[in-house]
Amino acid sequence: MPELPEVETIRRALEANLPGRKIVDLHVRDPRLRWPVDETRLRQLAVFETVRCIERRSKYLLIQLGRESAILLHLGMSGSLLLLTEPTPLDKHDHVIFDFEDGSELRFRDPRRFGMVEAVQPGGLRDHPRLVNLGPEPLARSTRPEKLFARASRLQRPVKNLLMDAGFLVGVGNIYANEALFHAGIHPQTAASELGLDEWRLLLRCVRRVLRKAIAAGGTTLNDFVNSNGETGYFQLSLAVYGREGERCKRCGGEIQRIVQVGRSTFFCANCQTPSITS
DNA sequence: CGGGCGGCCTGGAGGC
DNA sequence: TGCCTCCAGGCCGCCC
Image (tube, rainbow, N blue to C red; front, top):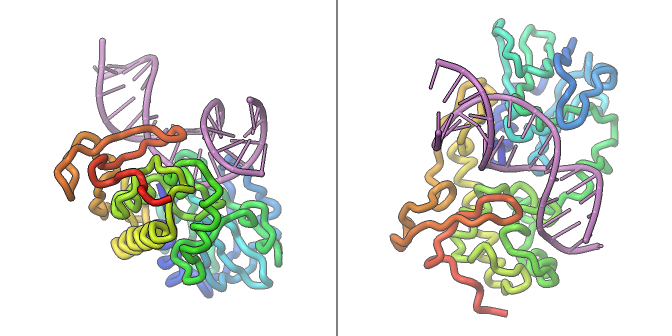
């Protein structure tokens, strides 16, 4: 399940390999992704264009093309991109294929079809409905703990739910929300409004540290992640709490608990993560 | 309007 | 071995 570190890892791999390649054809083998893939539009806007650069916003990849059109792409939870330079058998989940002039191809593979592939016309990214309501990037310097504190001060919902809300802060999925809260020593059920500015400083620092470590490791891999070279990346980042119900806390030796919040598993150490005492 | 929740989707795991 | 159920999860849209 690609979270921000995985997507950023893929972006970097694509950025090192795609710019300069010219799309000369494409194939939509199965348009039934999160939203139906519009092959005609994709063809009109992408074929005969050359890749300029690859950007990332939240967990979306933006492949910028010549004439300022772009391909907006989301890997959902089982999507992967493969850059192939020699003939490779098709997988039944290879849904969209871009052919480059030099004979290489970019494949969008997605068994669960939660991803998206869409062509965007020049200028269309600025107010794109998928992007327009996204919160700040956790790793951007412009994202300040003061802003998070101010927004959160009015919100009663548990801090873990808020951390995972892309309208508040992007790119923090279930794994990293759990990990960051553990490292910050904050109980996941703490009401967001209960956290003081110092705690937001600490929490943002922990979110950034966890994300940076995962990027450095090449992305945490659980089940589905295949990096853009097509190899299964099995760098299991050492996780402190996620998926460790019943095991020992690495810090205090206590037992890791599992609860469910908005339908998602939350893992924490009840000893190390205490409800906030500030107000 | 904040925010919880259902549904999308399929492969893998676990139970019998 | 095979069938069934459950679970994973980002994100939209529904609804209270």
